[in-house]
Amino acid sequence: IRRVISTGVQSLAIQNENLNLQEVNYNLSTIFGLINELDSLLTYRILVSEVLICLEKDHAPMPQKPAIFLYRDNTLIRDDGYIFEFEKFTWITGAVAALKRFHQAGLPVFIVTNQGGIGRGIFTESDMHKFNHHLIDAAKKAGGAITDIAFCPHHPLSPDSAMAAACRCRKPEPGLLFDLAQKWQIDLGTSVMIGDRNSDVEAGKRAGMAAYLFDRGDLDQLAKQVMDRHFMTKTDGKK
Image (cartoon, rainbow, N blue to C red; front, side):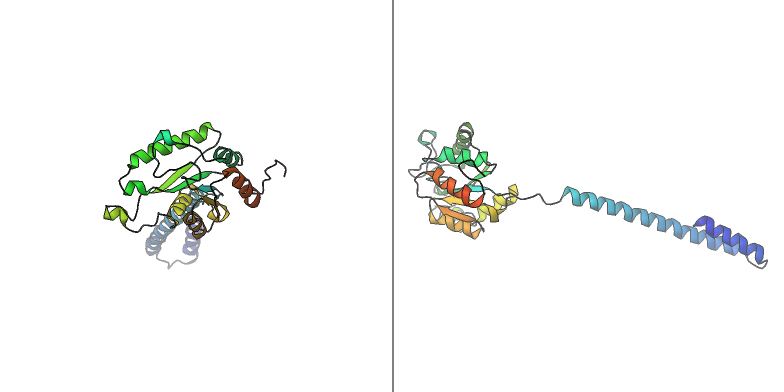
């Protein structure tokens, strides 16, 4: 651009003897300054565009996947009331086989559990975490896997007003399900909730999931039905 302008001005100067070259040179200097600013602006815009493209690639939404959500007590393990002691740990019939079935199908398994014993002062949050770690280790040793556990410590009978207050996490509220889905990029619409209480089923449905009420019989029998109905995998190994 500069070369073309300079050449044009020189040609005009040759053709027009009355042309004030000093004034022309001043104006040229101003024009070239504007061109420099334009170059900088264009370069800046190009750099910003490239940065935005990179950011879009880096922050592109992760593909969501389906998952299995289970209530803990009397769905996965037996519970005689506010269980937190290792020595009382016992699997529900079919629980190990169900966990293995889900794991082999590549489905992440999550536990969502009301643990009002914390709010009522029966055991501590630390006690619960230790018990849950024991559960996760036992599932892994048995050939299954538990990806994560979400819990609600609140209870309406808690002596602590903060723990007794209404919350978004105590089922049938679906808060725990939404939290896990956001954390792990789970598609709730293609996921399944299983629990032994109506509040479990209600929470699942309110989160947009298919939900099943477990009769505390054989969990693997229900797991087979869930796999066949929702994940297009026949339990006999055939497609």
